[in-house]
Length: 295
Image 1: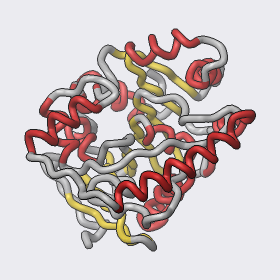
Image 2: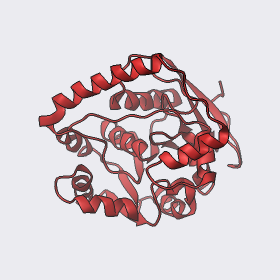
Image 3: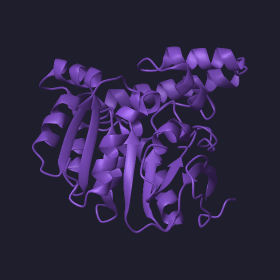
């Protein structure tokens, strides 16, 4: 296990971190001096800590960056068989990491699902999160209350069917080139081969979060930290096309009314932070280095 007190003076390479948890380990990587202001970076679904490698190298040296592999992703132990994957399981995993790091206040950078986790963590523990950066995300998957019962029943059925299917089959075996091509073709948006090479090093599983819109808005109303949302033009266009009634659209309107939220749109697709980190880094640097987080 790498000691959390070790550090590198250069961001050209990272140190590995290991966090023991009841079901195994959560793996991570870090850059910089732990005595500097800490930054936790959380990846999205079908992703891994490597997604931030190129972005971190463009961020200020005056911060200590820790990127983790969520459970079941990358090098981290998956949850035990038979455990129903739940949003709060992943949120509690982030909490376990923070407690082991013994951070009292820190910044969160989260991409996609990682940004959703970051927003909920900031709502649950507002005294700990100084600033939150959400990359191309607004709200987790939610089910209206009148459909919630059926959704949960269907999810249980699908989980049991999937377990049975996996127990009766051998996992696919791909060459490195095949794995990279499958990753590029399965992403929500185009991603370069260079970006896919990094993601393939730590890739594993998938999840959705069955909450209701009512729960969602109650939770995010408790976020008190300064928040920067960097959203791609393509995603913004998608959100605005749904208008009233769609959770992402309603969340965007909610955030726009809050003084502690700032929203910036940039060109690119969902993985722009990995493919073209130079488009993202300047906004993050300005936000985390200015005391009042003024863009």
